[in-house]
Length: 130
Image 1 (cartoon, helix red, strand yellow):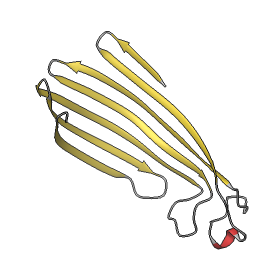
Image 2 (tube, rainbow, N blue to C red):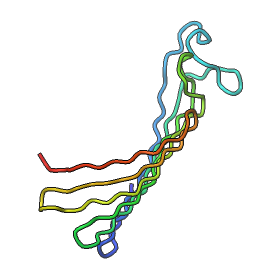
Image 3 (cartoon, rainbow, N blue to C red):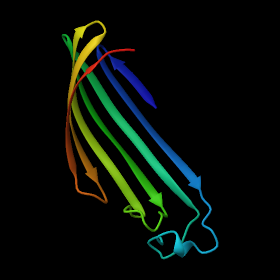
Image 4 (cartoon, rainbow, N blue to C red):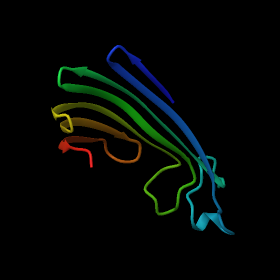
């Protein structure tokens, strides 16, 4: 992961890979979808990342974020996911400080999904520490 602060602008980024081994059982074709080459692998991997920039403008923090997750490997036969499943999200947000410990937050997020229709989400909330 990387964090940089240039004057008041913060930039954060991270990339992570996780490889998991799983038991396929005696007859994998009864429980898992085959891979693109028709075989069954006993591992799958997940690749995750994000890049985020935060810019303070007076009492408001403006945030832009790009993140995603990719899963590669066998999936259970009943799963709607494919062998190469992914999700990518684009976020624009603003967080306005009302007091030192209270913020009003708003964001719009656009999701691109490999195995489902794309989605758009709008959020509005109040955040406080507890």
